[in-house]
Length: 294
Image 1: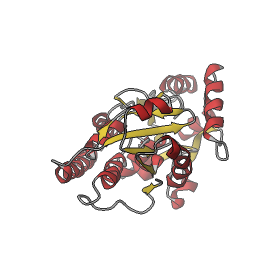
Image 2: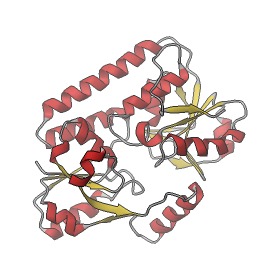
Image 3: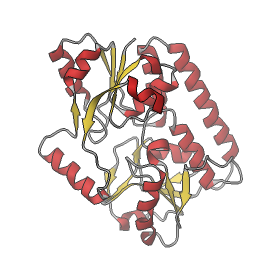
Image 4: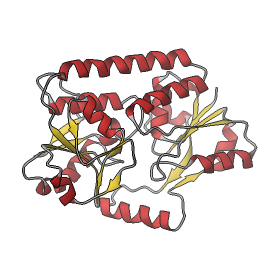
């Protein structure tokens, strides 16, 4: 099949299923092995926000949404030229990718024969379900089932390792200016890692909050996981979070690699969080995953 991925998490799923050679179109944000970049066509572009502060990014996003403008640009000609069989997209978050409706409209307009599969998980269990859905749509259901079985086995291993241990109160800051309390599958990750999520929104969208409200939840551990950033960027932003939580540990986490992208690496994220909360019970996460800031 000829596959096009319109969001980074779907690209990770495609690679995890061993379908890299079938992937012909990606977004400008997809992370690819260097050897593969020349062979993939970028069909979705957007503004490069590197160098912008979290507050500036937030203002830009709000301005675009208020104006009814998309944050991402679909290169329709490039998409049509690829003649895809399956396009992977989402309706979960307009800040993360093009909405599925825009993609479906473009496919109809262009006369493409592609199927469009929208991946919209809100919980960790639903993320595993999207892997199965992609596997079925790409005609490799056995690979998907094997991948999910392996991920479940790893989650079970963490659960067994932390069973019976005290669960520290964990707040997750998904954005810092303004602060956002984490939602979607992130509270599930904290619970799976042996923590007690506080000031979060399980199975729902992340929402803006206040530092006072986050402090009132009395977290013992604060995880800073800003969407769109890996560890160094998260650590830089975590430094600004520290003064708001004088009585808590503050940790930066590789957000894009482990937390905010709904793909197989969320299980890596569970293992990394478990390494923060129960370092004597689980193996230390790989370098570049987590960093204690305070």
